[in-house]
Length: 304
Image 1 (spheres, rainbow, N blue to C red):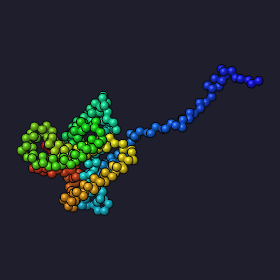
Image 2 (image 1 turned 90 degrees about the horizontal axis):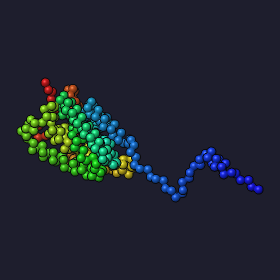
Image 3 (image 1 turned 120 degrees about the vertical axis):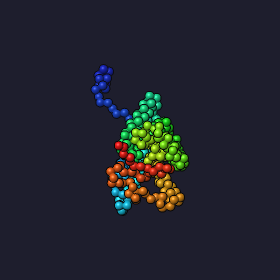
Image 4 (image 1 turned 30 degrees about the horizontal axis):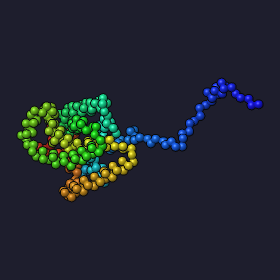
């Protein structure tokens, strides 16, 4: 005769027994992980290169005093570190406004407000520092970049890339034409009513058109950084495509310069020692020196 266990004791034993691991059915497919939004080593490396290039340009020797590897480092840093900083600035805007997907609703308005506040602070700091160091201070220009970028923070990567390419192709020609049309008399009339110019000798015309880092030509770098910020940079496919695109653009840009202007087109102004000076003034990243009509750029103008 088989002895059966009371149902109460069976349930008690089941409660006290350790839980058995669940085995998923064979037909279940694991969900693919979404794009990583964690820290990107490549972006950190780009920041490090930009800072290193800035130090090389600002406190390093002139290119004419360097040879070998040091000469190549000095040449590569001249003009390129400021461009990399501008591109990273656009990328940083997407960290505020939403990396892969733009923030909407209240979060979107708060993100725009944060960007606008940063822009005003940068513009104020740049104006104060420009009173001493002149138009070489880039902070005020960054404030203008951030304000101009506000209407673009909700756009997709493809749209941002198209806008950046259009700026890169059209803006330099447009800036050349506008600078040739802005005579000294026009500039004086505008500056007479410009509060920023009265405060620091760096006015709206300088920030937008004829300064060391005019927004008209430099916004292409900022918008390109915004487009990069909307991409899945953790994807190997995206990384390979960006590497191929960067190499192609580099070859096309330098090749076109050689074709149109000869070897002098690739000559860095650092060869003249103009990027580093011993006068105590803030050194100039010569890759961004404007060539304006009727006005010679001044590194600094002290006020009494």
